[in-house]
Length: 429
Image (cartoon, rainbow, N blue to C red; front, top):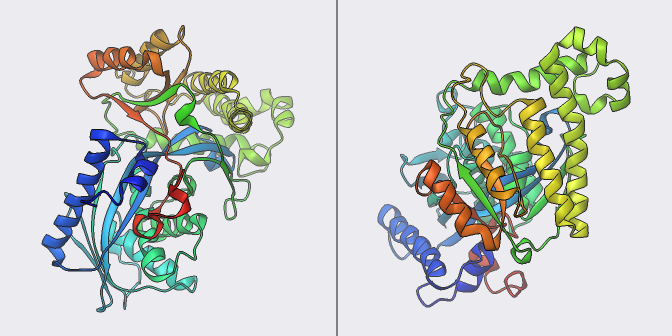
């Protein structure tokens, strides 16, 4: 690394050159030095990375077995890892206590739930159940994926651990979707969070990724080829600095109310209800499920269709229509899904204000803006024309504080062993 031999793969992952590329190189070198400090020098190590992700289209459609368009970004979790012979996994993540897992006992531990140790143990258990190999390793990890930003820092960590197992012990034989399934299994069964596959698969597959969750056990996953770096636009994520505290009831109400609308038709999920049938029975659905549930169901049907249309636009390189659909998605989230602010705290509308400012700044210059991820707090996503980027960023930071507008890039690949892939054809473009 010090001699620049990894610079080509750093450029491939982060699309940075000059001083910014040097910063990435230094980031990995610091991780290697800290690995040496915790686990000893003169170790044969490998370098791993797993990206965060951003939801592009399909806001709250996945839990209704719908469609989503997502993309991995150039913020990531990285690891320096080395095999051991004692059957134990030791992972020291920057800013957190070390996790130690004994591979001789991969049973669920109640006292580990909601802690990273449960994710590591659960991923190891998945590999064993699927006939994969496991073994001990030491690893130091660090991440610049913003926590609470909707960029899925937890999924990046899960994919990172799965990628380490796949690289150190399984000759990369497990596919990116399988690595994602390992993370989902650990999160559901060991960590205790009933999540879908979206976040993990977006991180693991990489690039623009279209999902169809009609069968959530075997989702259709399609990598969408689109060179966003030469599109003339920049992806920004705006941190509104709104608190996520006490929002669990708001998040939980969305799938519950959508399910109530589906239940009217004897179904568990809205994907199984024909849209025409829904609208033919709109009056009765409203009486049965209530006004907000009916509005949220209306959002689902339109948003599910939009996610598919957005994917088509990328394939056809129709950015004007693509941005139009993204703006429609954001407006539907505000008006019908109603996940921009908490109804329990209507005086707190940081996301609403930020969306309004983005519209003012971008509506006459092109691009798009929408809420990012689960909603109620967190971040706003904006696609900004390159020539307007500095003005946009200055205006956002003046309103929300320095550093609130973060520039991201679409990363072309998901979880990866830099050591094994460096110099291969994957990096030669």
